[in-house]
Image (cartoon, rainbow over the protein chains, first blue to last red):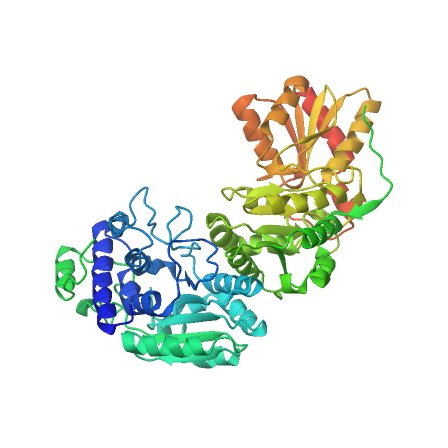
Length: 281
Length: 317
């Protein structure tokens, strides 16, 4: 699927999935999920080379790891709509006995998920390990990962960032969701991280900036550029500037919807702004 | 009474190193990671023979655990190596989420466990690691007793699919188990048969238990000594069978009495066959600097302490 219109239609449907999932159980994280909808849709449908079905080892295919596991709604919706499991299962999000746990896990055997995440800061190390396994296996496919910007406050990331350049992990593209917000407010107010691009560059990473992180065309361009940089002895970071709550007017420009579900009225308004495209689950 | 002798003393960490070297030669999927302690963990041979399969991570244990979990996705069998303190407490959440909950086939190999690390003192002498690891669902916890058993355990855990915590130590201790004895995860080994008291011991305390049984024998007391190299899953049957004969038990470990082998044994006994039990373990305390022998004596972990606790257990029958 490389037609932008198709990707846009899918994005709108994914937004509806996210909103309906969190509304049903009155819990979950819609803000960051909506902010990354375009990224997930584009990555899974126009960037990654994936095999049919699901094999945990993922030999000879691209892999993806979600480090900021709380944006599970967008992950689950995109996985289901990419064929990893039936879209009807989105109905079970956060319910008892579900494979769609609040945060993603391998524990319930959900196809598409290769590591548990939720406790922050661990995903980059996982991506590095998987990338090194690919090198040992002479597997030329790539490893992708996504991390929150607030998540970079976890120290393990910096261990991983240091390691990745020292060991020339050049078959991995780590994307940082730069939405500038975290639970307690703006990242600049909670714990300002300064110039994140300069920090990655100081650690000898190659950095690609995507200023319009909610534009499918910009994401396609940035990720294609990042892909072309692989295999050159340096790890690659994509700084993706997104708008939390994108596509729902009252959820944008605030951190209020980080971990809060819409009520009935709010859901109706949000869905009205995103008319059904490919069919609700 | 069956007797044990030894001709040499070797450190259990060298047993780990030898097992890992053997695995490097026989199992192409085995990879190893170390956080700046290659010499201490005896990983030099594996590193030199398999440079592509060895990852020096630097002083960054959290990253090491994560990378190990990632390497399993691609079919590798990672063995991580650092001190027991940095293998567990320092990286508990990484192990919990990325290894245990994710069900990854990572072998966490931990040296310098317990008081016998010696002079470095309490910052490095972890006495809580068995408890931390055994509480994680599905984590296997193994604490072998000598060089030969540590080597065999290292090789055996590569054949087991799932997370394992393998605990061993720094000092040279008697080598008294047979070379090339097959290591069966979760299967206790009866070292000495007896009728008056059951002594179950793990790790370095197995030799102390054997020494204690000799002293008890001289006083006319018949002690049964069981080597519990696997704390989880625990060999409930072996313990229950022994106490059905002896009627009392002493558990011995280089670990806090809270959360260790002793509490696991107490649970089995409480549920199946309430039995007087005494604990040879540290008493909710940190360690300190000293020689291993001084520390084992001061904290009541030597054969003398086992003799005293055996008599105490028998008196409660």
